[in-house]
Every structure is written in C-alpha cells, then in structure tokens.
Length: 152
Image (cartoon, rainbow, N blue to C red; front, top):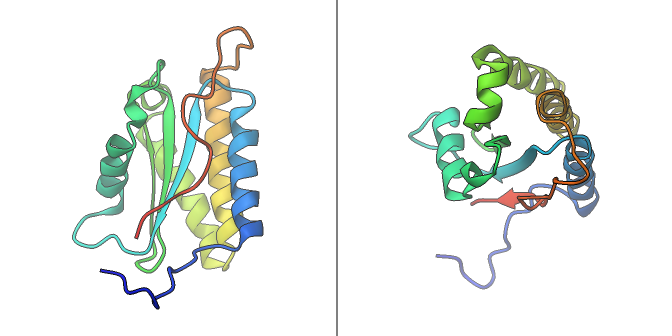
C-alpha cells in the first residue's frame, strides 16, 4: 500500500529515460526484432533469469510473429540483471550469447556506468536481431512498445 505522501521512487532522470528509449528505437531500426527494458527495485526469492522469463510472459512478448523479442531486465536495489530472448532469436544465438551480453553490461555497471551498460546491452541485442531478423520495409511493424516498463 502506498500512502499519498510517499513519493514513487524514480529510477532514472527524464533525460536518462529518453536516452534509453532512443537506444531501443535505434536498435530496432534495422530489424524486425523487438527490444524491451524492464526495471524494478527488487528481485527477491527468484533468480534474475527466471524473473525475466516471468516478466517476458506477463508482457506477452512471446506473441511476436517471428518470436524475436528480447528483454533487458534489471533489479536495481538487488543489483541483479538478465537478458532474455524468445525462441526465434535464442535458436539463432544460443545460451552463451545471453551470458556475454549480461557480462558486458555488468562490467559497465561495476564502473558505475548504469545507463551506458544498459545501452550497450540494447545495442548488442539490436545487432544480433539485425543479423538474424533484418528489417523489411514492406512487412515490418513495431509489435511492442519502446518505452521502459517500471515495476516496483
């Protein structure tokens, strides 16, 4: 329960949010694939990959035509991160790819470059999606919203 005088925690400034959405839009320019970003403060009692899978399903990201949606997941207070991809892209890139994206993101986080780390992950996802699911101007449509999804 939230009381009226309790201010909702802001994860990022408006400028940082714009930067992240712009990174998503840029990543999606050359692909039919989708990239989403979900941020919450806590990831208790479950590992980050399982939580990312749960969010992926709840956002109905598995409904894209080519099954090529990806999710960058962060739990800021718990310092947890994961990247999750649907069956179509996972089949193309394999398990080690996701681990590599997370490692590069965490490397930047350790240098206190949170926004840069997220943008790096989004860019990497966009490159893989563009390679395996190139943009087609005749058939491509933005199947999922580009804005950041904030949890609790």
